[in-house]
Image (cartoon, rainbow, N blue to C red; front, top):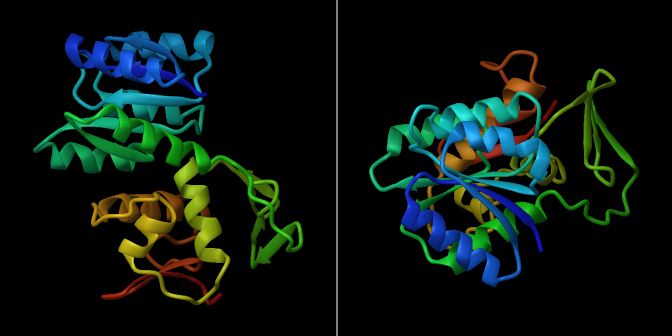
Length: 227
């Protein structure tokens, strides 16, 4: 099972989530503040960060941004209903997914499993590296190069790029991408897709306003290329 760092200031939520995940075999370290969460990253070495959006002093968005400066570990935000603006800011800061509180433990665990699956390198019989202009995508090794230099991608960013580039020029709707990449099998929030696309473009495109790789097809969704 995975090692989960839970950062949640509400004692009842923190204790409930911690107990529920422990009962399902996860190793959990639970702390109450963003500062404590950042301090725990190096010593605990979690597989995933479960992060409350509304924290005292240092917010979850600030913690997410700090983590993304040095790490691409999976991050799932815990949010309260009505935090729409903050949710978007959190996704833009680099979160891979979010869960609205209150949430059952089985829902949280399902999201954890889905995010962690994005970090697993799938077996792929195609050549080791696909070249698309200056972009090199090593599908087996789960690495991406631009002009020969590696690019650090969060799990959702990498999975999205692998999925779109596997079928160049095919248009995928946002809902289809939610199902294929995030494994959300029900109607969910397409802001997950849009925020991930924006983060990915910043990392791989030369000109973000005129993307070469991840293109928008108005009214339909996104496609990779044509170059």
